[in-house]
Length: 198
Image (cartoon, rainbow, N blue to C red; front, side):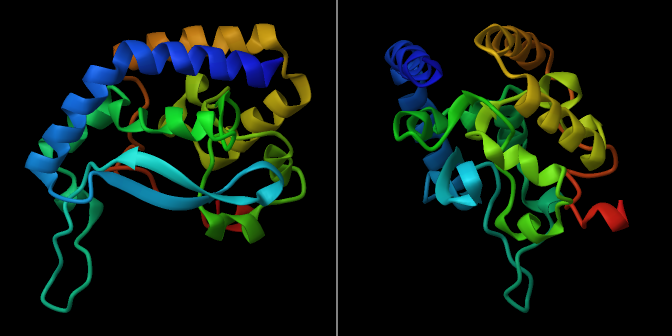
């Protein structure tokens, strides 16, 4: 039921937002160059890897040694605007159509985090990851990793279609208010280093 509801809602959203998505794609190409999409392998249901899609928000600027500059330097004002209103997440609607994401579920993080989770935290991968989730409407990047994982695990244990509808509604409110986008002191978010290093 959840899967078919995901597909139905996503098809409606893509139909409504199609021209908007095309316009953003053109602007990303003009302002940030090619490729338009930022594609990164993330762990899905039961840790199965998949390619997550996002609109690019950063340049590819490098230092004299060929290493990428910091996120703070490469994140443009246009990129900040896309992130502020979660517009960079729109390509993930196609991840939902492919069955890799759900509209609601724990956010898919980095593959390198997998061995760092405690047994409890790893429970977040027992359900399909989502574009938004319980942690996103309860602090997003403004809360600690430990708090995020506690919220993710709570969702796994208590998920219902009614809760999903509540999360989608709260997500819309959060996006409009642009709350919890960045972690305090960081251009984006500090990397997770494991429970022992929290």
